[in-house]
Image (cartoon, rainbow, N blue to C red; front, side, top):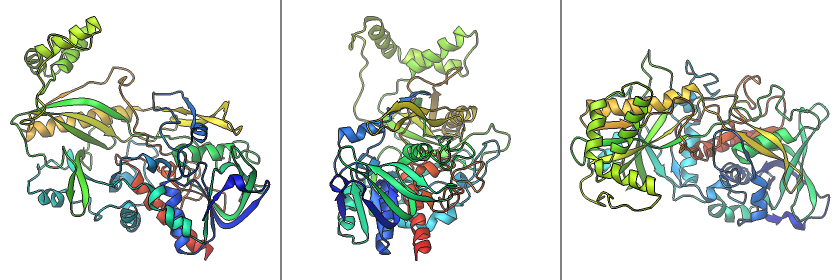
Length: 535
């Protein structure tokens, strides 16, 4: 059942066994689970069935750390949430992502991958994917009729991703919730406060406001926050009437350890020894076994002893019909010489500069004149033998308490404090970037695939063209110890009997895989837990 909350009488109190705040991938998955069990549920969705600019503005906030996408463009605030614009890339986290790792503080989940496998299999269906088969890339490669490279498993592996249509949860599952007698979806309903009892050991009701309409509340036996990796923390921080630091924040954990997947474009250029090397699934999405798949190069495990500690990564490759790496080589050589040092592989760089002198002349001419074209523009074929590849690095960010979201003094149209995002990376993240470059260079050389020209990091800071992936994670992290996390292994907020959090904000670590499949799996797991509690 759908209700436009703006039509409710002022002061209405809705009652249900469960109240879900947010209707994105996590909230809709959870609502479907409770619907199947006939459990009375109220879902509060800030937006309507379609995009609305005034509602979207409620997501606005400040980016005060490393550059990232504006907060009001990196997520969507209407029914279906960010699944309304996701690309559909799906992969579960690797087993190593759940394990404590030496040298990466706060790593390790209170779960293991095996605990989530049954829920991953169910999540595959909700995301309209094929078989749950990610650990045997050779099986997929054989389907193409090709043979893959035999990478050193401690250095690199082929990581298979499946591609959802992509499933727009707000459209695909709208009719099932519309017909539900147990679930009421309140549209245009903004949760503005969690009203707790005198010692904040339980949440009594959720207070709600409409932008153009009444204020009302929901009283439920269990409350679940499912508003995304930023807003989940914001709601907890705003609920400060009983606990001045906010609910679940007795140990100053809410909002900390914000993680994204840093994306580095053109982090390296590969020049192949022979055209068209055997790299199946690396350049195209391919329809196989009733789904669509592609491959990336990913971090091998376990990391060899003695190497600097690094996180996980994936390398996305784009084919080149003519390789131009002389420009990057020129930057590397001049940067090293300006620092009175000699770059590694100097002769390789000089060879690239000589070979690509037309492209260098073109770039210099356009830089000096400000013109978009030049008489030196090199010929760039659009087809033919693949002679190289652009390598993008998309990588895991290590948990970092200094990377966080906080409340700012600015307020939105509902009078709520907006968020400020202070995104920070660490020395572990620098090593992850360098390890990704090093491993692909070593393996391409060992297997005679080709030579890799890597773009170095600045001596301090990060490249100006680094971007995030709009994967907001970690701000209400999961831990058995309330001193290091906000929720326990079930998603329940420490110290509060009936308040839960769903979504990527509970991830203790991020891995390199896109988060949606894990979000849905965790929501299904929480659904089973609530069905057990309510029964």
